[in-house]
Length: 173
Image (tube, rainbow, N blue to C red):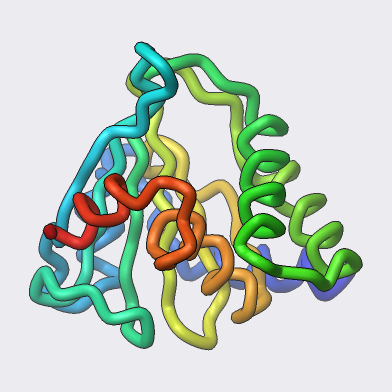
């Protein structure tokens, strides 16, 4: 627990804290030559849940390079439900270390805020670094496990994603 708190403190010190910071400023800070790769909308039945956009250096996604996903919500969702669904999707992708997944879930439950229409969450992936999260361009936390970032973003970017059309849109295909 002490290591997690120390990591979060270090990440918060390194993150911009200006209330005027926008998602694009955050993305530009952490992703060199950041440009939009693609975007799409997640819909369930007739309801749009969120719009999501992938940013990468020069608009070309490579899983071994830094990138960011920004989600603009269209519905009210509890942060705990976002965390629970994320853990479920990671498990569905084939992750089987239940002890580590339980740890990630606890951290996500502490990080992910409740969202309303017009809220956004941006996740920043940098290989070998903590996965940082922002709510409405304000830092909300990070998970300091390099393995987490790969599995978390694979929810949308893996060939095994349950939303292949959304993945194709994110990858600009």
